[in-house]
Length: 140
Image (cartoon, rainbow, N blue to C red):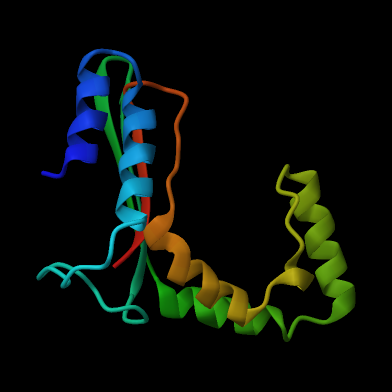
């Protein structure tokens, strides 16, 4: 263990920083270090097949788990199909999405943006307001 990582863990143990702050510091520390050889579980960029969302929480004293695995091919096909929707229909769909509380504009959906999202999911962090819940979003 390098000295900087040990210092971060010491600050965490002393209560000077929170777990979230310690995690952010360690991630920043790892980004500044030269890359090492990938481990056996590391996936090469561009080979992801699924978008995964895992939520672990405690609800009414009972453990609750959500585990969603969506094929990226389905997402890619959906983005391509959205490009085929006539502009008049897109306007109606966007209005309904807005009405439902989802301010999402399907006209802005582009295949290259989906690929950029997939490439950056390895760096994504989701914070949850509940101390007994965790959310992980990643590609596999």
